[in-house]
Image (tube, rainbow, N blue to C red):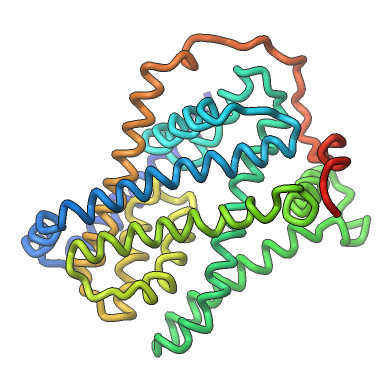
Length: 337
């Protein structure tokens, strides 16, 4: 009961934050103009953005399948895509994206995948996505400095980029730290996880494809946002979108609101204002992008309602609740140096 109470409190806090931010944003805007902006979007550009996000799910599936292969888990592509789509549905109805990740782990367990492999696979998929985003932000920083003159914004985005880069570097090198600092059990799990991800990035046979997909997936989100900007006739160049959309994606991923609602809108308005995009247009881009994520999530919900995953169990593997992130031996032998 205490766990359920805490979950209810966290959910309520996130819901209130999303509502409060959206109400605050709406209070400073011309709602009639906002409505006009939303209704005036070019349907072709909206459908293009939707198609890009759907394409993104295929690439996400491919990246996740590669990671599971590194763990010696064989997933058929269609089965992995169905699980991913179902998780996107639960991302919409559960308090955070972690809910969708939990569903992915649960569905893998029902297919007989070991607990430790399921957790490692989903966690590594998330971290790879974060790494790709950090790389894009690092690449975009010199462009930001040449394009934006707002010192506070440069400091904020630069600080966010630096924090992501330092955090990534620390995790990937934890096993190089003094033994007395990393021997404790909670830290040791992160040490093993960091070693596994470093193995994926440096020694896994498909490391180039893995990293390339991590970058391409975020570029597709950027392209979808740019397509919506074109559909709204916003004065946003593809160059500016490349610089400013990745920070929005990163902030949206912070699990402090319901599916990123509110946080995404505030971040979009603040970032696009740096290149002169009016608040109503920036908010419209964000709301339409959110609507597309809901549409894709509903597709996942339909798959869930009609799927065998709801009622069938695969033969269960022996119970394995260890979160040991040691490298799989078979893949180590087959990887290139």
